Image 1 (cartoon, rainbow, N blue to C red):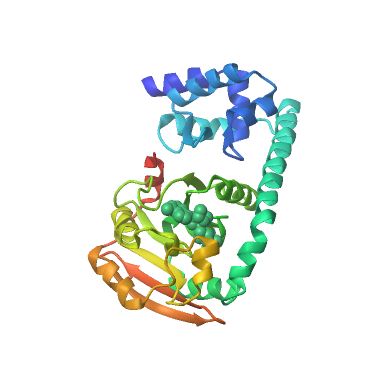
Image 2 (image 1 turned 45 degrees about the horizontal axis):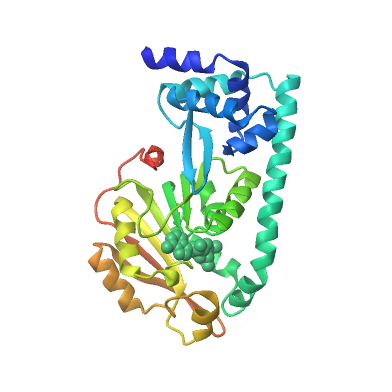
Length: 323
Ligand SMILES: C[S@@+](CC[C@H](N)C(=O)[O-])C[C@H]1O[C@@H](n2cnc3c(N)ncnc32)[C@H](O)[C@@H]1O
């Protein structure tokens, strides 16, 4: 009763209802909300603080930015869901807010695209050394099969490609990456694809911002070769995996292309299946090489592993425990 009253009081204000209507479509910073709503930053910060305290919105920090999104659970979340559904989508204020939101999202995409363009040449050079992305995607899709995915965690999500590919099969998706620029691209992509149940967060593969035993599928797609300590990264993945959860690892088999280390920050020049199996043993995950895709000159390996135990149902809500 107290929670509901607090949420009702916090929602009963025109700007806050407009904020709920905007967060329905995208995670937004105070600065972005300022651009859309034309109100001062301190004023909007006050509204958002009240809304967060009443459980209507969730806030999360990523570097210097704080993003806001609709609360995921609790009384406030339920109320916010109802209120968003009741908003009059033909109302002129609502329509103006949405048009300005379109502008903000377009600007985000442009910034992300500029960054991507500046780095694309480098990525293309690496891609040319192995099989096509489409071939890897198809193999990974085959290996993972049709089983529904509860909570999907994409470690080193980069531009969010894995979330785009497997997000539609997951109840919830979370991508974690160290690079704010990459996260910017991923966020713009996910917004563009309408994958609102997928989020990205700044985070390190060695200290994932995720609770113990909450994740159903962990993906490492072309990321473990950046790891200073792959065993630590696999141990950390094992920590967050729920019993019965799976881990898929896509990376190169051992190679001698030192230039990937010199020019592209790879720490490791591929991984031998025995080494990966040993990391798995250490982390109590049963990991094996499921498929190899030979390119010229690099061969891509796809490993699949599982954490012992029986999967439980209804775990996707656990993403809300992400700090
Ligand atoms: C080659 S990209 C791959 C991106 C994505 N997995 C894909 O395949 O499209 C590697 C990504 O790993 C991220 N990364 C590197 N070290 C990381 C770490 N310690 N924790 C989280 N992300 C990391 C980089 O920022 C980069 O976005």
